[in-house]
Length: 429
Ligand code: ACO
Image (cartoon, rainbow, N blue to C red; front, side):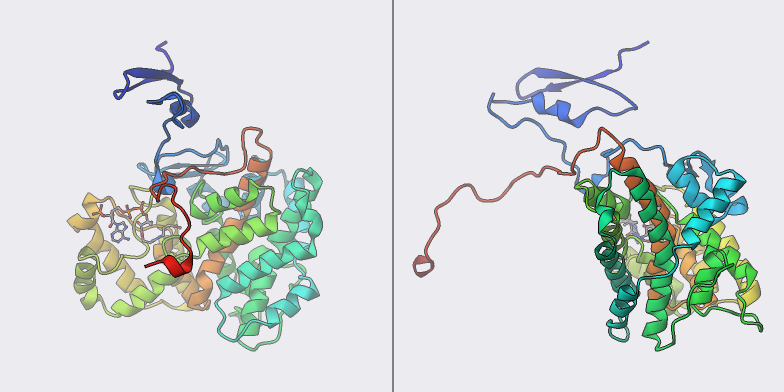
């Protein structure tokens, strides 16, 4: 077998460093031995946006962006979306294996027993002004939960971690639904025993479509599938933010709040909202060529297209496109779907997008479904948060139980001023 090392020669000095290769990576700290002067700090790797830096070893989610593959704990996303449920996927992500029937029923009961929110949180949610964006409200709500459950700070206690996981998964949908109903000046709808996770959320959101006031099973299933598709995506922007925060042993509420804040931006989880606004602005399929010219002139981005990792069709986008038509069979079509489908076709035939390997991502079609189901546009990123939370929690547990992990603390290349003396204000030019 060939030698599993990488030899790097520093041509400034002729000095070589031999670094071990493990899983196709080298330990970055090994570069530090390369110095010109003995008292130099040593060489660093420069990687803005972490495009080629592995920050952890993980066993949760596998993504092959070139081949369009996504698996949770080894199970293809297509099979999970077809056969599993959101809470089963949450269990899988957190514990590494599919549950037995008994384990699933216990897990589900635990989470659904934590759907009531604390009255202090209700009071807090009432203080937000009309029109407050749900993401600001949700981030505040989950951070505020850290004040209600101070024992969550014991991040190295297994049982304590599990209790916080049940609470976060159980309470977030209630807090979000309550915030939305409050925003609309509607009375609060409490969680209802006997409903599963997604049905309960749609019930609390008031998205009941049937004459008897029940939620439509097709929409419940669509919600569950959408949550599953968003449940984890390895070391993306929000998950990395969560790992950074949790590496200082902050409690999981604060870590999830920080992750949600990172998700909110339009280049990440805020893209679903941005796509809807973009499609509405295009307004008519006739306007697509002119819009794509603006994209190619770099005036605007084609939201919902492109991905740091996928250089092929995002497998989640394929599934979502199918779900869209199942939902429309119940809700009636969303006219924006025609614009989206034609926009996708134009883009996939255009050299600008083909040469850069830009394909629809998970956010391209999800907002169209959410809108058809009756969710307001500004709610879309918060729906992404609900779906992603089990993934964040699984990554949190993996981080705090990984003996190789340390507090996150990247280096910088300092290009500022060298030392200089302070000038009193009266002597400045
Ligand atoms: N529209 C137009 N051009 C694009 C787009 C887009 N959506 N995405 C990438 N490009 C172009 C860039 O201009 C760049 O071209 P250049 O090399 O000629 O300068 C090239 O493709 C590479 O793009 P980068 O920005 O370097 O890719 P990066 O990996 O840094 O960014 C990102 C990935 C942020 C997702 C980007 O594709 C984007 O902004 N997409 C739109 C927002 C979006 O849909 N985000 C959701 C992502 S999925 C998720 O987070 C759930």
